[in-house]
Length: 123
Image 1 (cartoon, rainbow, N blue to C red):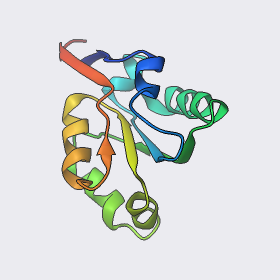
Image 2 (tube, rainbow, N blue to C red):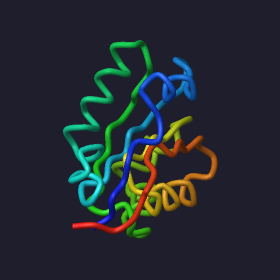
Image 3 (cartoon, rainbow, N blue to C red):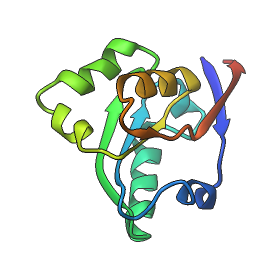
Image 4 (cartoon, helix red, strand yellow):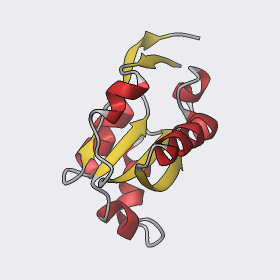
């Protein structure tokens, strides 16, 4: 299991986005979930907080394991998600650094913000 920590405070994150951005939050539902900074619950809490502050969160997506490139690539090609991801200006992956790298690789036209720092392996 990967251990990750938050890279930014909420205010620091807000300084990296604008209220005009079309934002997708993508949460990994594996290791980062158990670090209490990813998974569906934390993703939804962040989305609600951003929306309350006037930011345009257009989609919340959960991926089983963001470190698997095929699962990230599927968001780009699947009929259910490809148009949503194509319309995004910003993707905020609540993932480890491997997941961030995969999202940045698959969506080079979006601003992908790395909000977590992987510090190593743990149990």
